[in-house]
Length: 256
Image (cartoon, rainbow, N blue to C red):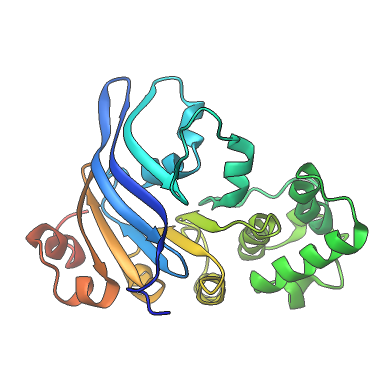
């Protein structure tokens, strides 16, 4: 199925967000498609992270957060009163800029979420550990030391462990907030390689401040500026022939 033919799993419709009355997002309408990598780019304070955190309702944790508009996951608004937020966050898994492994072994990091979700079978847990580590391009490096403390891993390995930890919950959507911002080029390449494989079974949203990474690691790119979606298009087309001058100015480094 081609990128343009794939159906949306998330439909964001006229989403506006304020914190203490200050506007962070203004009228965002954007589809997130199955089996596609969508990059979100833009200068600081464009609303990129706020947008991500709306999708799995992490902004709810801020008392001054207000929103209007709709976020539909498989046609159902994630803000409906009967939505199980814990289940929503399992379906829309998030990887953060700074890896945060739990103070346990590699194995225990990976089975913690599935156990909370009710999985008790040791065989099933072992299977999830292996498949998630393979998907995060980490299995070959750690398969013989799964009982080692996760904090003994390098920074790049810790970030791939955090990616695997999300994958162990078998989400439908992966959202990544600058996951490579502190990583070396080799670790970055491994995460980008993982995203290529993961799009066969997930929708992926990648927020990045690195336009070169967006060019390499996405199928479509959305450009945000001051809380507004300026344009979204096939990545190659947006990078070579943007329709809005502000997009072009950002891509050639005139601001941001």
